[in-house]
Length: 145
Picture 1 (cartoon, one colour):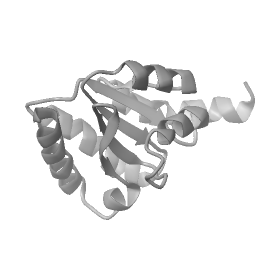
Picture 2 (cartoon, rainbow, N blue to C red; picture 1 turned 90 degrees about the horizontal axis):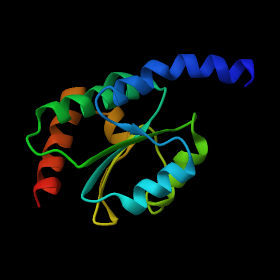
Picture 3 (cartoon, rainbow, N blue to C red; picture 1 turned 120 degrees about the horizontal axis):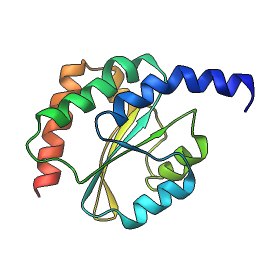
Picture 4 (cartoon, helix red, strand yellow; picture 1 turned 90 degrees about the vertical axis):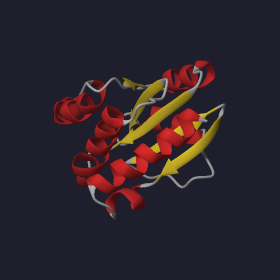
């Protein structure tokens, strides 16, 4: 591993941990993504993580808070890290190819298809509380259906 990659791994470790500490499984290779998408049953909440400020101040806190507050939770919590695990992120984005790539973003996958998507634009233009409320409502509706 070169010095740059080693440095970046140290920088993003807390950004990864914010989600893994909340129960998310990191998918770091295309094979991880393919295995999850092929075998996952029920609803998957997928976070496309990022180093940007709107991920740190809005997306990750909103996701973690929403999961702590909703009564009915998705069966699967997974994340890929855009800009860090590029091949895994590309593989995940391939499952919702009709949606322009954005990070951070939040996807809900149910019954083999994309059920809902929150792009970066809807994250960076809202407060953490608004994103949390939006995600909580969508999760409750989709997971309960």
